[in-house]
Length: 298
Image (cartoon, rainbow, N blue to C red; front, side, top):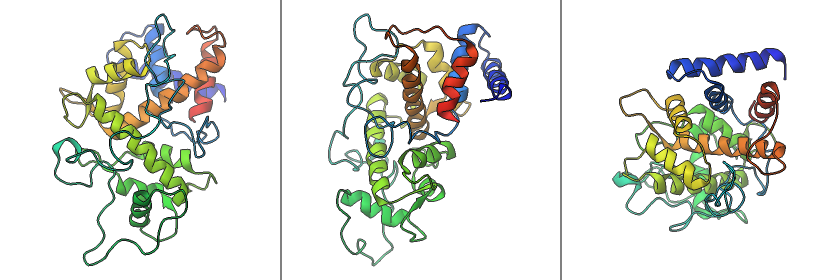
């Protein structure tokens, strides 16, 4: 990582503080740096996998992501906060009654219906591939190449407000489950991605207390706290300001929730490598910090 990249990252972090009218204190610049570096795609996330065949970021059943232990350092959760599998019905299925009362069954990643007069794709799914994920793969693979590209994935995923998933989240997820680093995933990688999306969707619905289809600042703060991250309300406010459309009541859609939580998990793992004593703090220079995080994110 060059010094020019470091200076560029610092400048962006200071700009975030300025845009959100947050005082430019060292703590706030630190938090802003987390937001800046997390907006880049996780091009190396597949290599950083810890548990799981196709990549990191799947809500783990242990380690980072549970409720905080009494007296535990910030960001060091107990096991159990993230689901190890998709609860509430067969994984890959939509919530009962459709997402957040919306009548169409295809929002939140449900596969689009087959053309009129056509049944399900011929043949059964390969071994270890979920039948529903296989059916969706056949529908999303519009060019029938046997692979799903970022463009095809983006066209298939929709938030509760009918907006398509953002480019960064789609690229991040493709990179996480792309074993060949070719910028596309096969049916096995897609099946793993399908499960990944459903796990985060169920978690998203759990924290969407008012069933609005989005996560507010307050709900995000509660979500991060229950995941075991002892982060300040200012940090949640910074994330909402950075990732949500500007409005009187900004709120986070599913795609940004997946992006933020996955990247926070990666940053936490990077921090843990330095915090060998598990005390929740380390001694390192700002350049070392930026290098540590940017090497994971860029």
